[in-house]
Image 1 (cartoon, rainbow, N blue to C red):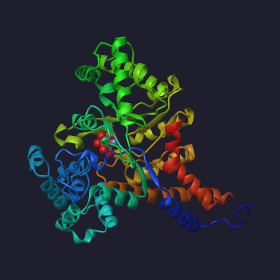
Image 2: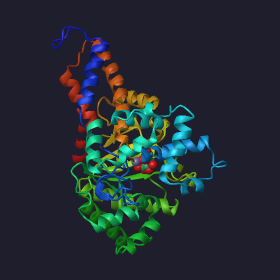
Image 3: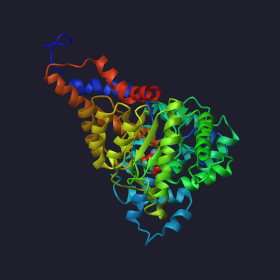
Image 4: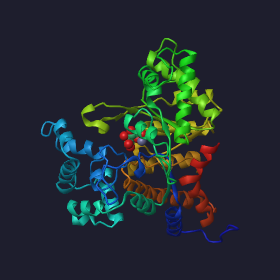
Length: 444
Ligand code: FIX
Ligand code: ZN
């Protein structure tokens, strides 16, 4: 018997309550590659002429040509049969036709990325059973991009979309410089993404110099001051809510004085520019660790790979910078347990997401259970990493389903020990997981 509920809840009762609370909780998606229409869209639509270099990707052809599916189709039709350069010369719709034919029609679409397309179509009201790209394309062309964002946010119950804004991307940077209001859309938040500063400072410093900042590959105080001024200018321009970087699996901290010069430069930038600026501006720093880029350059964005990273380097950094707040996710399944244990040691670390190659049901389930058993509700179970707007629908639908199973089991476990969680307490927990932990770690 417990004072708040005399009857031990059945698992079925718990699951029903948990699923309802999860469905009702608006999500703040902390990492996506999604953009508002003000960044242009290459997709034919009812609101205006497409912009071939536009950054807002949505609709059936963009869903089908998602880089996850490009990687998968080259397994079925290898480059020996369809050379990469020939594929890249195909139109977007021809690429989509090719992927649809080989991954959906001629083989069952059972991969997570294939299944995601089906979930999106179904939730958007287009029956996958029709198997008709033509009708889906016609429907897409009748949509207005901004209204479509509202539709997708309503279907996925995402209340806020956090962008990724790579300042070294020429297309994106030009759009910010042309129109400082380009991201002035209340549904979106900006994030200053700075990979070259930490991964390739010699070349990054040359870019800064060409943009009027007196930086050079030499790690002088002037270079440090000018790089900081550059980042501060872009934090202000973007109204960035955090800074972010993706790091290779061989990122180490600290690096010996005699270490690789480019890695040393990255370390100096981290220690003397990025983390001090984040602390001054009360901004967290997000580190996504484990991406080995372009292992197969012929595949474009699909050519990146996972590698085993070093969590001890992360704990060295957390210990050295107790005044900074960090969001961290790691790409290798094998790093997840050590990362969760690291979060038990450092309150300035907020573990987040099942990133990229671990964003699959079997691994989301495993990782989320492990994190909850080690961290309670003090972590962020997921981010979508959506590159195509529609993907918010499937990435969150699939995660909610798994989260419902995990939470139901955990609540059932404590109910068996006499602790029944009320629906109000479930709602509180789910709000922490899907919005509150992110918002609290942003503010500090
Ligand atoms: O570095 C990142 O933000 C990665 O998420 C992307 O580069 C990656 O291509 C991706 O979209 C994974 O889901
Ligand atoms: Zn990403």
